Length: 640
Image (cartoon, rainbow, N blue to C red):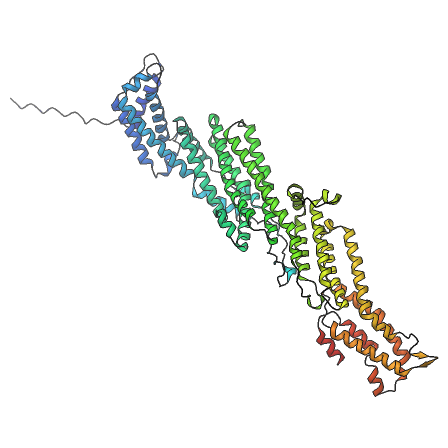
C-alpha cells in the first residue's frame, strides 16, 4: 500500500494591515449609535494601536508625510491619528448606553489606545513646532528688512563746555521708509502649510489637548518673532544692562530697537494675526484670537522693557532726540493696537481672555508713551540748568561766538524739527513748577514758552559773559557775533523761526544795531575827535603847528593801538564783517582824507611829513579792510 501523501501545511496567517484594521475600527465606531452595536476584540485594538505607532515611527523625518492622496483624500497618517482619537473617545466614554460597559469591557484596549493617543499628540506637538518655526520663514522676515531705513539719526552733540566745531555737532535726519513699510513684503505661510497646521490643531483640540496646542503655538511663534528681532540686530537686554550702558552704545541700540519695533508691530504681528485666523477656524476661531492676543502682548511687553530702561537712565541733553524717536514710534503704533482691538471685537471676542490681553497691551503702551514723554520734556527743561551752570570766567578770545551759543542754537534748531512732537509732549506730560506763571502764550503752547525761556536765558548769559572783557569795544564785538549767530540760526530754520516769532527777531536786530553803535563810539569816536578841528588847530586863521603835530601823533597812536589790539578780534559772519568795515570806512576815511587835505601841506616835504603823516587815506582804508579776521600779524606786516 503506497504511503499516504503528507498533509499540506496551512498557509501562514498574515497580519491585517492598517487599512484593514482601520475598516474594522470604522465599522465599530459607526455601529455605536445603532440598534445592534458591534463589538471589537482586544486583539484588534492592540493591533490597530500598534499599526498607528508604526505609521508614526515611519513618518518621522519624512517630508511628504502630510501630502494629500492622489484623489485629494487626507494623508494616511493624519487619518490614522484622527481615528485613534475617535476610538479613544468611544472606549472611554461614560454615561448611558454601552459607554460605561465598554470602558469596563475594553480595559486593556483602552489602556493601549490611550497610550498611543498620547504618543500621537506628542508627535503632533513636535510637528506643529517644526512647521511653526520653519527657518525659511525667518529668512523671509530678514529679507523684508534689508532695504529699510532707520528713524531720524543724530550725531551726539558735545556736552556744554566741550571744544571742537560745535556747528557740526548736529546732523540733520535722514528720512526714509520705516521698517513698518515692509508689511506687504512679509510673505505668509504657504497655503499648504497652513492646511497642515489647521488639521493638526483641530485633531489636538478634539482630543482634549487644547492647552498643549495653544502652548506649542505660542512658544513657537514667540521664538520665531525673537529670531526676526535678532535678524534685525535687536538683542534682548536686561534693564540693569541698559541702564549701565554707555550712551554711544545705547544710542545705536535705540536705533536698532526702533527698526525692530516698527517691523514687529506693523508687519510681524499682522502676519501672526493672519496665521491665527487661517489656522483656527470655525468653533476654534475664538482660541485663535486669544492666542494672537497673548502673542502680541508678550512680544510688545518684551520690547517695552527696553523703553522702560531708557527712561530710567540718567537724563542728558544729547539723549533728547533718540527719546523722541522712541516716543514717536510708540505713539504711531497706538492705532495698530487699536485696530487689533477693533478686529477682535468685530469677530465676537469682546469678552474673551484675548480682549483682556489686548486691553492690557493698550494700557501698557499708553504708560510707556507717558514715561518717554515725561522724560523728553524733562530733558528739554534741563537746558535751563545747563545754561546757568556754564559760569566760566574766561572770555572767548577775540570776541568770537561762544561755544554755548553754537551748541544751544544748533540744539534748538534740531529740536524744532521735532516741533509737533515736542508740542504734544509738553501739552500732555509737562508739569510746570507751581511758582511759574506763564502768560497766554505759555498756556496755549508750553513748548514755545519753554524754548523762549531758554533763548532769554542764553541772551542774559551772553550779556553777563560780555562783561568779562575789559575793553568795551571788544565786549560789543562779542555781543554782535553771538547775536548775529543766533539770528542766523533762527532765520535759517523755518521751524525755529515759527516758534520764536518775528517780534523776538526784530528785538534782537535792534540790539545788534546798538552793539554796532557802541563799538563805533568806543573805537572810532575817539579817532574822529582827533581829526575834528574844534578851534584848537586853527586860531584866527593861523594853523597852530604844535597842536597839529600832536593831533597827528594822537591819530597815529590810536591807529597803532587799534591794529595792536583789534587785529586779533574776529567777526566770523562775512556779512556782519562787511557791514562793520563799510560803516567804519564811510565815516573815518572821508574824515581823514579831509584832514589830510587841509593840513598836510603845513609839513615840510620829506622827513617831517614822513614823521607825522604815516598813513595815506588808502592805507587807512586798507587797514580797515583787514579788521576782524583774527590775524594781527597780517595787519602789522602791512604797516611795516
